[in-house]
Image 1 (cartoon, helix red, strand yellow):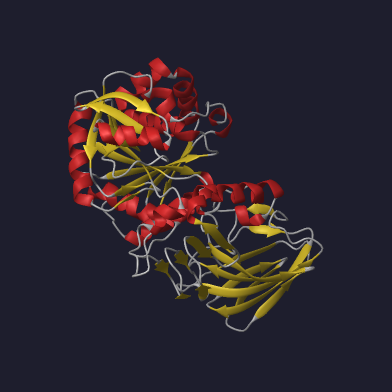
Image 2 (cartoon, helix red, strand yellow):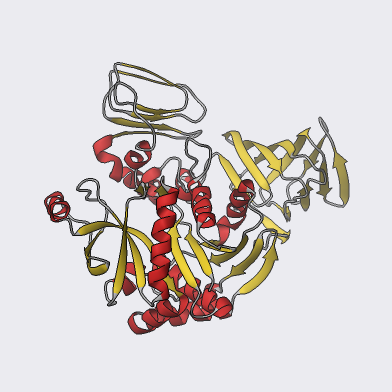
Length: 471
């Protein structure tokens, strides 16, 4: 019998703006210990018994960043399979893809533990014990959910009513009065969104309750492109078929309809990190109730959460505030309004503002670039290229570029020429010239790029050759 942890990683994390953005969603947020939520999820998967293979269901655009996160942890005994969605279709589709893949490779009896990448669990031993119990129930043909013993009447979570290990019903997010009733009854758990089941059990349930999701997911998997990567295998789902998968949560598609569902009640230090208040709870308060991450100075401040990335933040005479600084945006919110940060995210997206999607530092398969300054007809970037990596062979219609090497060695294609540039050397790339940047060395290549032209958007790019399969 195989036990396969499956991690669902994606979403926008709109309530955690400005740190979470569409191209840098919640799973990639770094905590005070230096590890991201995604890395913590991977370590939880590694802690389960007899695990040799970890599945990750994520967006195609986040694959290289995900692989980098796992590589940092350096757990070579685990092979990784990446199921890459061309677009988000909610958790029912992700569950179907995971179940179908595991069924195809390992058979009906293989056990899947499915959990989101953007949750935090502080007690790993308790989580492992709960997972072992869930695996035993799943072997007996049960669909198992993890219920969290509630600590207070939370209105932001769904609830599970249980009779022993049997689920009576799932309840949507309640109002405060109803949540208090649930806590007082002793029959309810918080719904964690984590599950355990055999591949055969889940496919049978989906065939019964949501055959359209299962069938269309199967088509996208059968038409998928599979290729080896450094840490295992990537499977890129067929976009045309996957776009036809109905967009539903696994709760609505299966759990609320199925019978004989089991629950494992547990106290594992769980949080879904659904807002800045939840993230703040991971930091111990000082004598005035302030929770601080980064370089700050406070005077007459009470019950605030302050997070600084690069700059000093000063606050005087304030209370009950959330203050979060990033390189290109600052959030100031009352703690009572933490859930409504998503409204700012929506406004930015509706207006086309880049801050809903991109950070000033943007991750690419080959490395990163950071926008240092931009103005009318110019933009200045700091570019880092990983050892052995290269950008696509490309050209721009509306801008020219000047590259200056700061450190490392650059191999450059510039029109008909091929150049080797080292520290303090440069090249000018006229508008319309085909060009490529490569790092042939064993150290990171760092360079400064100065763009000038009528239009400097990231979509002014024509790719001719790309080792990462981008269009």
